[in-house]
Amino acid sequence: MPRYNPLVRIVCLSLSLLAPLLPAQEWRHYGNDPGGMRYSPLDQINRANVGSLEIAWEYDSPDFSDGKAGTPTRSAFEATPLMIGGTLYVPTPLDRVLALDAGTGRLRWEFDPGLDRRKRFNLFINRGISYWAQREKERLVLGGQTGLVFSIDPQTGQPDRDFGEKGVLDVARDMLEGGVEGQFGLTSPIPQCAGTLVIGGRVSDGLPRGPSGDVRGYDIHTGQLRWRFHTVPHSGEFGNETWGGDSWKRRGGSNLWSIASVDEELGLAYVPLGSPSYDYYGGDRPGANLFGNSLVALDCRTGSRRWHFQSIHHDIWDWDLPSQPSLVEVVRDGTPVKAVALATKTGFLFLFDRATGEPLFDIEEHPAPVGDLPGEYYHPTQPRPVLPKPFIRQSMRADEITTVTPESRAECLEMLEGASIEGPLFRPRLRQLTVFFPGTNGGSNWGGGAFDPETATFYINSMDVGSLASMVPRGEDAEIPWRSRSGPQGRFWDSNMYPCQQPPWGHLTAIDLNTGEFRWRKVLGEYDELTERGIPPTGASNLGGPIVTAGGLVFIAATNDKRLRAFDKDTGDLVWEFRLPASAHATPMTYMLDGRQYLALAVGGGNKYNPGSFMAKVMAFRLPDAR
Image (cartoon, rainbow, N blue to C red; front, side):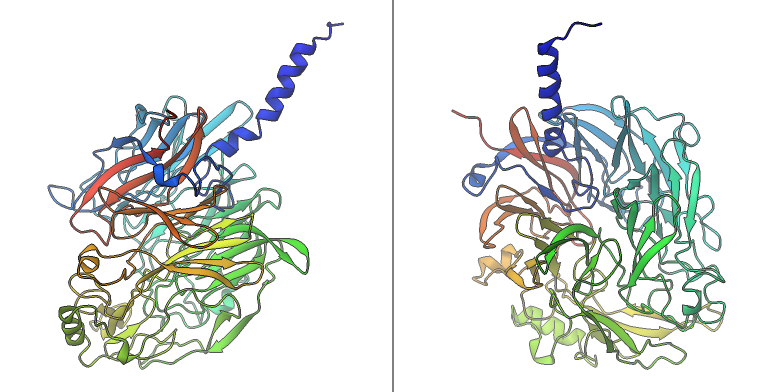
């Protein structure tokens, strides 16, 4: 019998106590946890010392594009890095994975999937990778913009040759019926649940009979297909009756282009789906069109639907569900309830019981306006939560046209000549030029929100940028008879990208999820040239989201003004800001290494809001050395 050794027991006990702390010091998932709370328990950086933050290191990648010199697609660096075991992992806009020393930024290895820079995409973009570990095995999973999935050893950067075909899985192969090559890809992290990779995809919004938007489950070790959920239900399936006639057949859209959340305990994946295609006209698809614009809770093992909620019936506005649902815990009648919070482009925040889908705040169906397009189907009602109230602008009056500068007002008035300006949410595009809020980017977008479990507060950034568009006829032989045509500047702004309505143009809002009431709301962002003229901060367009920490801080970049900011999470007071070399349309993250807390983010400029500056820089901040 082996002799008892108390020293071994002490070491084992110490390691067992230390083990739960290690994930808390890392950032292992896109939203830090599989449910996307974006909360960190780290508090070394706090209200009292955040003003002392300084750059710890920077890493510059050449993987960006300004749309010139042989690379016709522009880039957007929207990734959130992961930090595991002292290494920072981040995908570039061109799908290359960088493994950086989390303390110095030194490159340890890189994985290049060989994306063809000469191909045309909407943007070169990759928002993140995922990580999983089981016993002695661990892997990174990269979804590529051509529809390839790679399983990578995080220690070496080499492909796992047992996965797919020598480390590569082509998930576009059987999704292109009715579409063309290049119309399907992956731009968001792939979650895993119950040993299953839950995979969606980016598809074309403009092809009514384009690539399938189905969600599929693949074995995490081998890449074998386990199940397929039809996001446009087939004949005999639940929801098929919401598609008039045979309009469901080969229908595009209704896809998971954004980020899903998972609850391993319940074995559920919470999947936010986009709008059916074509996204601005639906006369060829009468009905509510399930599961377009729906949050669907899927069984990770079987792919079967547990429950769903449709946020928009028969979408003709391109108001997809854009962001990762947040798995949170709230209090109802003194009892903790596990819930899922869903932020939308339309500025609504819905809250559901995570297991049953029961709304935690009442949802009402309201009558919806009707348009003037022959042959279009207009759904009679649309859902609205009683609480919380909308966190964005949803309409405007004619007397709210901008007066920020005389030049902007004159340009906007010229754009609006003959336009229909006033109308409620869910007003459809008309044959007449029409203003509607929000624009196609929201509201809120893929950046989503952050949840503080200490106070049950949800933090969400938003922009108030409308759209100006009309519906015009297509040619006689067109598959669908109408298409959307944007106004002079594409969005409801002038040639300087100043929105055409009175500011504020961007906000950061804190919402108490126990009560549904706003805790505070602050203007987010500014235009330097307007501030220099004595105009108060107006708010700015923003893409990317916040994080919240136990140090009492909400960190956010996102805005189109080259700023990284920290707000007091209780009051909303701005307590620190840093001018970046370019705007960072990405969500930051934080981690602890060798006893020091770091804050890191991707800085890329470019995107749809920065036509003049492009880069792919990773920046990390920390407090100064103790003197």
